[in-house]
Image (cartoon, rainbow, N blue to C red):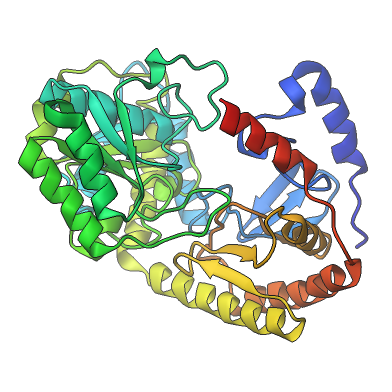
Length: 426
């Protein structure tokens, strides 16, 4: 099938009239290569089809929610069965209690659960609970870490006031001295240390947490009576069947969850220890759809698969197969790749590509060959992928390397230069 984008282009033109810039958020037209589709028609397993009928092996997995495959029969059946009896009702269904029981049984540090809709909801509740628990204001966060799109944490600060970002001190991820300096600066006002499970900032290489850094974050919170918060929205259940920092032997007081916990159905969660239970009970946090029963049923079905299948081991093996194949293909064509972070959350960047020109051209070439990669955001391996899918992606990548090699000198990606200027100047 020949790649085309006529329907997508028409929808973009219509969207320009009724949606600011035609698109916003992580699919903003400011961020993705020009040919990337904005509008999709359907999804199944590991694949996406755009409105023009082009099929893609999707390594973005909906930006993370697709863990077991789009349209997973068992998970969706649980959702639809519950929705037929009642979904968004005046109050929650039995599934709320069942899901809280299941999550607290699955996640070692958790004694209680609260539910919401987006990762931003969960991280914002964590912030409120930490301040309520300690009666202090200052939070310490890693520079460049993403914790959501609320005024207190959005990476693009247009429309944000200084008051929205008050009482924040920043440190360098994995740098113990930097963390300790930030805590000293907070003095007697430290409410919480926020940490990502791994360094998964955009535009830069990923880093696994240094166990010494993670342990020191725990110690500092204990020494100052503050709460340790691990924001596991992006990586939750992709690195471990527990909170991601279980891999480094550190238990947080609070952890935020979303994306994969219901395989794409809209729900997120905040999990906490008994130490923060009363503080959680005495904040006000709610939403019209936060008690919807059907996504909770889908999450329960997802948790059964998390506990009872080898999905984690398979996604790791598939990620390692992809990583090895890409390294081999890149070397064959004379390119150097930086593949960082866990294999099941791949981030792929070209060496000597400060302007992202090679990355954008390569990703565009992959797209035209039916593989949806992202030029600067970490990607995801889902359990619906197979070795044949990975081999298909590697064949497409080999062809895409040929395109980049034949291109000659490339101009910087103007839209990224504009974005960096906006972020730096905010």
